[in-house]
Length: 320
Length: 320
Image (cartoon, rainbow over all chains, first blue to last red; front, top):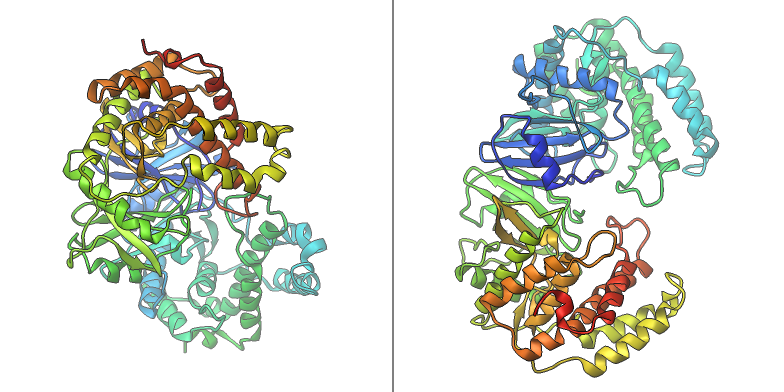
């Protein structure tokens, strides 16, 4: 939960004069999201989300993120639509920070995930991947394989304070991932952070995908690897093959996998587990006292990594 | 900012079936309030606030708080109205906690306070005091003069770590307050926590008073003492007599002061400064590491206390 920047009512009212969205009647800081400050705005016309981009988001990346949302929304993806000011600009400044207003999406993110949620996610993800193919801008994924070594090195010395032997184990896994990481699979714009709290459902349908602030160009199947980890494990650490089957089957009805993509799935899932393990480890070891966000458990992702190391092939994810 | 209890979408949907407020379309944790967990609910009919009462609120006090809001709203006070379930009950259980839904109030709390805000507050406070006189329930103020000694004793040993000499100074002030505290002034239900973030304004009018979870029976003029401290000092610590004059003048147009009340104002303002100084000091000294709420500065209230100690009489607050 997080609101890092306090916006005053006077500042906000003056700021909103640059938009044609009606008169402000309320705004509340939202206790969701960990990277940015988010406010729910109500005007006499509609409800909106105001986001102030905090220091973990590079300002130079914002035109990509906002342009992508504009593009995907125009292609029919249920995602927030950036609201453009009277001058046409969607990206502005408030309280010294880059800021944007986006449309509000109805729906709730699922706390208890069912195979049906996973199927709806797979379908929407595939359609989003296809919709992104006509988006002109690009952004490299700085949290893909090339980004893991520097993160590992920033954590290696103290990693064993979290679990004895962790540094050696992650070093060996990283060597393997770097040697075998696939390069020639179908690629395009991926979301790269499709955790359940970024996907809304309403009345049994997927009603929205939010938080595109890790979106980048990378292998499509890597997005699936991220979602296998984020959606298909139970709280006790066990893998739910039914959820994975629903997700992958629904995905490939919209965008069929190549044989190479299918074959690479276990490795991509290992890589995705490594990515979240390393960023969580980094946050845990470099967690400033008094931060507003409780760091997440890196070892959850070590257990997921172990699962993917143990599988014999992509049929472990429920596919024939 | 705070959401202490995570409510799942399934639990919430089942819970809302007990109300006749429409179908849930969204809910977000609100990063406001420090005592309880608050969610903004949107249904297909209206917007509401869901509050889960956390451990600082005594469950036995909740019928008083909710009954008071019902009563005040019926008397025309702009305050949240508890929503009663199909069985008539407003106070229920969710996630093992007492919980209530109240109506959503439009408006924003003022970050930059003007004399006009203070005047509108004074008028609304007086009307609220009058409206509360016909409320049948009572609740003693456990944070009035009798409650300060135990708080002081829990802090005395370590108070000087905050500022050298603080324990001795507060001990002496407390002796004086206990000896001279007035007993026979007009009393009734007071809000007791009317800080700016609990008062909403919209279109130049006061649109709502929220957060009645410190409300109690006490001297009416003590509520004014609290508001003088909370609304009439500038960020640099200086006292703004214009704001106080607006507040007190508007108040006494609605409910005239007795001569005794007027005379007691400096002492009541000292007591109010002591009350917030002590609770802030307690929170600072007993602040658990990793708490989600940053403790407020107790010394801000020491400076306010010094101001009220220095005044010669109630004309220091702008009244003739």
